[in-house]
Amino acid sequence: MPTGIYKRQFTAEERFWAKVKKTLFGCWEWQGAIADGYGIFRVAGKNIGAHVFSWKLHNSEPIPKGINVLHECDNRRCVRPSHLWLGTQADNIKDCVAKNRHEKGEAHWAAKLTDAIVIKIRSEAKTQSGHTLAKKYNVTYRTIRYLLRGDTWKHLK
Image (tube, rainbow, N blue to C red):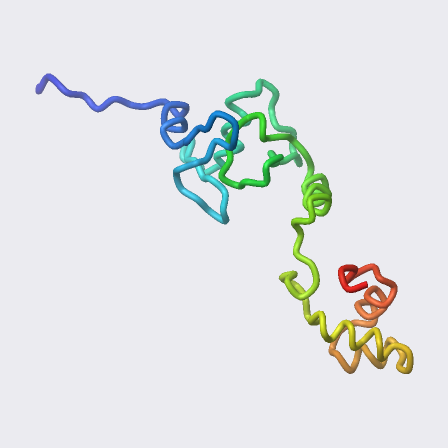
C-alpha cells in the first residue's frame, strides 16, 4: 500500500471562503459559479445560492418556508452577511419598487405595448371606447382600463 500524499477533503465552509473576494467596506463578491447573476454553491450534492449558504453560515436561525434571503445592496453576487436579510417575495418586490429597480413600460418582459402606443391610446380614448381600443391594439379591455386609470404605465403620466 502506497504511503505519502493523500488528497485532503475540504469542508463546505473552506470551499465557500475560497470563492469569496472580501472588501473592507463594500460587498463580498462570489467568484465561483454564477446562474442568473446569483452565486451558486454546491453542498451535499445540491446547488444553492451562495448568499443563502452565507446566511446559514452566519445565522443560527433556520430560514422559514416561503422566506428568501434578500440583498440590501442589490448585488446578486454579494455574500456579505450584513448585506443580507430575510423576507418574502412580496418584500423583495416592494424593495425593488422602492429603489426604482423594476422594469416598467416597454422594458418590462411581459409588455405588449410600447410607450408611444400607450400615449396614442390615451389620446384616442377621448373618442373611442376601451373595448374598441383593446381590439385595435390586440390587448385585453383590462389592459386598456388600467393604463387609462394610471394603474400601469405610470411613468408616462
